[in-house]
Amino acid sequence: FEIFLDLKYHDIPNTVAKACRAALDLDIWMLNIHASGGRQMMEAARETIEKYSKKRKPLLIAVTVLTSISSDDLIQLGVTNSVNKQTMFLAKIAKGVGLDGVVCSGMEARSLRDELGEDFCLVTPGIRLVNSKNDDQKRVMTPINAIKAGSDYLVIGRPITEAKDPKNVLYSINKSIN
Image (cartoon, rainbow, N blue to C red; front, side, top):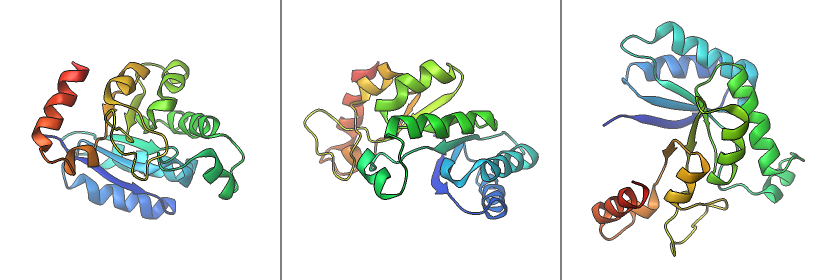
């Protein structure tokens, strides 16, 4: 198995760069930072990954807008863009500084794929099964619909970890998308 270090670093550029360097000792496959940390922070993270990766360079992706956030929540935070516009805005910055991709909901995946191309990695949380609870997620999608929308990787937590039979749930998800 591969390790996706999902710590969502968000701090000043120097601190995030040091955290990324420490993460490299874990032989990770992918790690993420918050795009809202800004261009300089993302550049510092990328430069550190490129400079200090030993065996292999992990994928570095940026969280755009958390799937627990709605447009109303963005307004409360002083962001006047819609979720779709803010996600695209942050994703374009991430691609511009040379990151490998972004974390986005399935609802934004198609527009990001169309705008940013096939080689830009889209990682999608907020995955829920048909008839399952949304929990604290506001922008959710089923596994098959997220894949059809252009997502490369799915982050599926509680629908599996809180299931009575997690192995069976994982099997049924795999069957539905293959």
